[in-house]
Amino acid sequence: MSWHATILTLFPEMFPGPLGASLAGRALAEGLWRLETADIRAHGLGRHRAVDDTPFGGGAGMVMRPDVTATALAAHRRADDARPFVYLTPRGRLFTQADARRFAAGRGIVLLCGRYEGLDQRAIEATEAEEISIGDYVLSGGEPAALVLLDACLRLLPGVMGAAASAEEESFAEGLLEYPHYTRPAEWEGRAVPPVLLSGDHAAIRAWRRAESERATRERRPDLWDRYRQGRMAGRHADSAASVATA
Ligand code: ADE
Image (cartoon, rainbow, N blue to C red; front, side, top):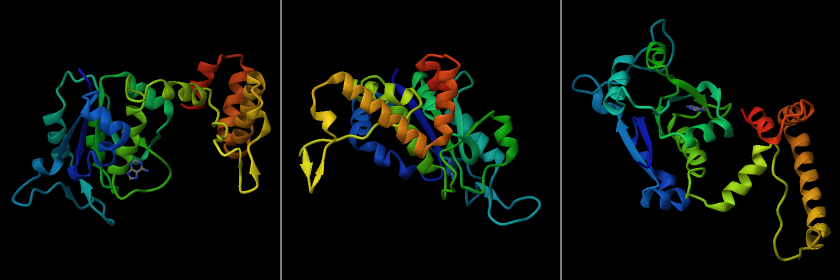
């Protein structure tokens, strides 16, 4: 059985969207993963298929009804479904590479895209949803976040990217940002490629790349740098440092 993504959304036409192109699109066509979109509105109430209502206690915006959302979920996720159920919300825990690895290693995922005013809290609790945010900014809905989360998982599925991805993975798995890349021409508009990369000295190239990775991480992401250093000082190996750094 291929990796199975189910998306509960008010805008099913947004999928597969960009995931229908490039590597994910080819993998979808080849059956390496399967996409099911579920229109929450199909479970809406009354003639207007209402899915939301005004917030108790007052305030702006609308809140997604717990009954409608739970019914939609039950229609697309059987009781014995082993896939994680994720609700995309700016109130969630930040999404990391460690999450992408965990989701990609399973059978698939069930995603609920909310409007940003959110889902009734009781439905979040009753369904034991894992609340995930893709970053500290507010999107107009969970759909773009679902596309981002899926993209990060899909490229890790066996056969989607091949060997190139696994090599790159190892580098980020250590909790460092990547070193900079260069290709031909060796000199462009007066800018030369760092000479070590043309030296043919593989040990020197490895050392230079490592130093550049560390410098970029230290300068740009002090949060990652601290965790990386803590992991090293604790004498863990690269892989356990990685799960800390990217958790
Ligand atoms: N919905 C709105 N903003 C979001 C975010 N930053 N992450 C996940 N879901 C969202």
